[in-house]
Length: 533
Image 1: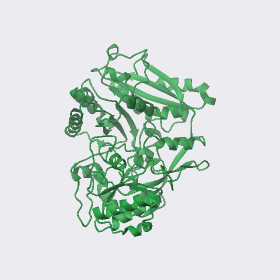
Image 2: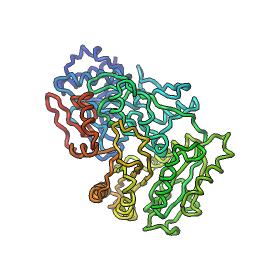
Image 3: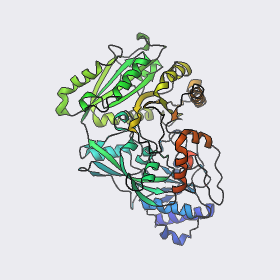
Image 4: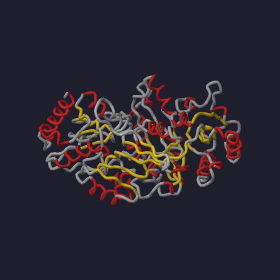
């Protein structure tokens, strides 16, 4: 009874506020089995994200769906309403610039992750198909739970993100990348099938063979064409253990040359390549022992000054070999054979051995440490760029040794990927070269009185980096993009823009979905007013 009263109150509020063409007595016809909440805590949570760079106008309500049908009914109500409201899907709230928040005065957030709370119907649990080697998962499922479910059958997804407490629908709406992408491609290249609720409320199954236009548009589509309610993810036999290795470089050319060589081995047998290739930049001596670099033993600190770094900058290559205990006897020889072909600084090989699940979940352990120190829920002015290989040396000179100086406020990742592992039919965009780099400046703003750690300083530095790339004609593409103007979005998508726009008009003609991306303005009869960002 309490749930029905809350639902009734929520619907009445929508009617009064946005003119929803529903009578409360017709609530049963809406068919919502989940919870449509106006609880202040839910509303406040939905107006914040991990970036903490913007606080959105609080949504009218937050839907905790029990099924894809709940989402379908909500979007149909929005689409058919004379006044209308926008709908934003939110996973674990890990967006940076309000992308999962409503940017209109009238918005409803669909809380995809954590929607199994309370009593009543709940979204389906992951279902593993061992023989077919795939798993069906709810769009709000966190990758850590996908891992746990698939490991029960000795299987695991092929491609990951560094942090596993992200929703499946969220990463598939961007790309989903980590050190395995050179070999298996991004997560969007490892999807067999999707269930999607479009911007007119249709629930469609799509794949390469069925509704293929929608399938490719949604993958990397920034939530513009539909809300992913189910994904069928490809699996492979899961290894038991990981040999985790880091080596240091003072010469950037040697560092990038070795990285590119290692990802060129993607077609070789497993024994002749690494399974994961990443790297990071060290411009601050203290950073080498920070949360991301805690791999290095405090009893054996690495001093930049003790190494002949070029311009005060070091580069760390991070690589792994997966293996089973039954093949442990060969792992040393395989690693040695690969390492001897690399040109790192002698005597800077750091190695550890751990369970596969512990390696994949490594960042969460760092998160817990940061939370304990009050350093997690702070502004995160992250900047993620895809840089063409031909321009990475120019980027290094201008940014790592120029703009950043010798201080930073967080990790700087850098690693290459093979473009042929990305499906050009998806909405995701990359530089137009066979090899390109992710450069991720994962900085945190701290209110500690130091200007270089302030949000204003870091935000201005991000702008300076982007201006440098424009001036130097480095054709970067933003990953997890955020732009302020329509023209910037058109430039981002380049020759995909016309197709992207056509797909938007086909699957979300009223521009109801994902208004927080600020790509399209909702087109309701009442002319919704966009909130100034």
